[in-house]
Image 1 (tube, rainbow, N blue to C red):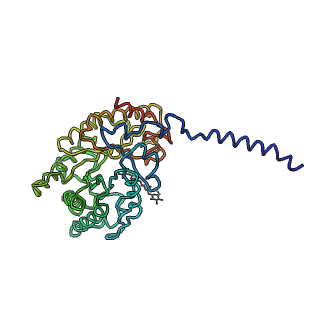
Image 2: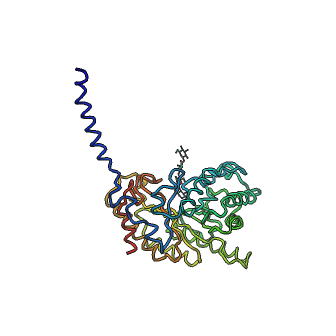
Length: 362
Ligand code: G3I
C-alpha cells in the first residue's frame, strides 16, 4: 500500500529530471558556441597576435586554445604573488602556468614588474638610499628566472596619473609608485635597463590605461622618447630601443571613441615603438552610468558591440605597428567588471561584439 502511494511521485520526479536534462543542452551544436565560431587568432593571423588572460585553472582550456595565441597572467605574476618578501620568491604558481601555456603553444606576456598596486609591503618601504639596488636585484631575479620563456614584459605598469600635463613628465608621475617616490623619474631608465640585461630576448613594454586621453598619451610619449634617447647616448651601438613597446590597456566604455584611440596610436607611431592593446574590454555603459551602477540597456550593449568593430578597424589599419590585441577575460561573468558585460562572449556564446570584430576585417 505504502509502495503504491509513492509511485506517482517517483514517476513525476523521473519525468521532471528527463525534461530538465533535455533543457541542459550545452550549446555545442549552436553556430555561436565559442568553439564553433571562427578562431580569432586565425582570423587575424596576418595582422596581430590575439591574447587573453590566464589563471591557474584556465590556462590550457580549449576555449583559450581555439581563439588565442598569447596569454597574460591576470594576477599570478604580479609582485605581491611572486615576491612577498625582499629576496624571497614564490614562483611555483607562475612557473606551472607559464610551463602549461608554453607547452600548449602560447606565447606568454610577463605582467608586471613595477606597479603601485598588488605589491608586497617591502616595495612600499624602499627609500632613496636602498631603492636602486633593491629594484635592480628584484628585476634581475624575476626576469632572470623566466629568461627565454617570456615574449614581452610589462616592466612598468600605470606610472602616470590621468588629468592635465604640465609638459614635464619627470615631475608628473604617480606619487603612489614607491620607486618613483624613492628614486624620482630615474627609476624608469634603471628598471628597463635591468630588465634588458636580465633577458635581452624579451620585448620591453611600458603599460598603462586611458592612453586614448591626449594629455596622458603625451606624458607617456615624452617619457618613452627621453628614456630611449638616454639609452641611445649611453649605448651608441645598441640596435634596439630600450622601451620597445607601449601597452595601451583598453579598459574602455561606450564614451570612448575610436578616433581618440587612433590619435594616440598616431602619436606613439612617431617613437618607432610597437603597440599592444594589452587589456581590452568595453563596458556596455558610459563611465558615469557604470559608476552610478545603473542597469544595462540594449542600447548600451549595441553601442559596445559597434565600438568593438570600430576599434578593430583602427587596429587593422595600424597593424604594421600593433603586435598584439589581448582581451582582459573570455566571458562576461569572469570579468573584473562583469556587471557591465564588457567582453565578447557571454557564457560560452559569441555576442554581437564578437561578430562586429570578425566583420571589421571584411
Ligand atoms: O586573491 C584574493 C583572495 O585570496 C581573496 O579571497 C579575494 C577576496 O576579495 O581577493 C582575491 O584577490 C583579488 C584578486 O583580483 C584575485 O582575484 C583582489 O581582491 C582583486 O582586487 C584583484 O583584482 C584584480 C585587479 O587587477 C587588482 O588591481 C583583477 O582580478 C585584475 O583583472 C586586475 O587587472 C588589472 C591589471 O593587472 C592592470 N590594469 C588594470 C587591470 C584591472 O584593474
